[in-house]
Length: 321
Image (cartoon, rainbow, N blue to C red; front, side):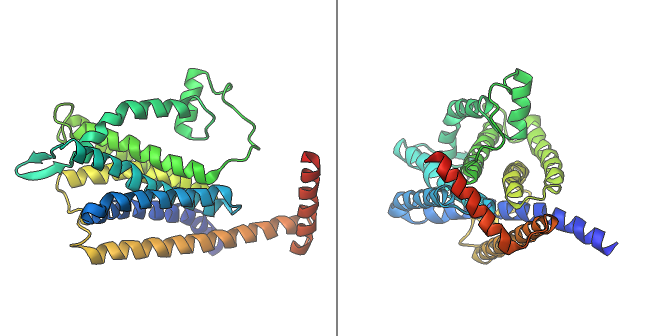
C-alpha cells in the first residue's frame, strides 16, 4: 500500500509543482512591473532591458541543445519578462505620450491608463488567435476547434517532427496572459459590462471551475516539461478569479505594493527559486531513472547506450551530407 500511495503522489506531485511554479510567476510579475515604475525617467530603458533579457532566455532555450524541461522553463520565464518589459510598458509609454487619465472611483485608481490603452489591442489579439486556429497545434482548445471546423486534417503534421519547446512555452505564456487581460478589461469597463455585472461574476467563478478541471487533468501528467506547459493556462485562468476578487476588495493584493510588503514578496521569490530548483533536480533524476529502466528492459547497460547513440547520429549525418 505504501508503494502505491507513493507512486500516486509522485505522479500527482509533478503537476502540483508545475502549478505552484507558474502560479508564483503571476504575483512576482506584477511586483516587478510596479518596482520598475518606481524608477522614474529610467523606467523605459529598464523595461527594454527586461524584455531583452526575456528574448535572450528564449534564444538560449531554442538555440542551445538541452533537456525539454529546461527549455520549457526558459521559454515560460522569457514569456513573463517579455510581456512585462516590452508589452505592458509599451502601453505605459503610449498612455503617457497621449496623456491618458486613469479610471477613478471614489477618489481611487481602479484601472491604470496603460490598461485602458491595452483594450485597443483586442482586434490584434483576435487576428493572432487565427494563427493557432489554422495551424498545427497540440493545444486541446484549438484542436477541438479545428475538428469542429473540419480543418484538423489539413493542418496535421507528423508527430515525430521536432518542436521548439522553449518557443511553445514562450508564446503560450504571452498569448494566454494577453487573452485574459482583454477579458478582464472588458469586464471592468462600465460602458461594456462593469465589474459588478453578472457577466463578470460568470467570468470569475467560471474561471475558478475551469481551472479546477484543468488542475485535475494536470495531476495526471507525468512528463515534467508537459506539466509546466499545461500549468500555464491552468494558472492564468485561475488568476482571473484572483484578479476579480482583488477588484472586489476581498483581500489586499500585496504584489501591487511590493515596497510596502517587501518581506512577503521576497518570500514568494525565494519559494519560486526553491521550487524551480527542486523541480529541475527531481525531473533530471526521474528522467535518468526512466532511461535506466528502459535500458534494463532491453538487457543493456548505460555504458552501452552511448556507442549506439553515436552510431545513430553518424548515420543521420551521413544521410544528410
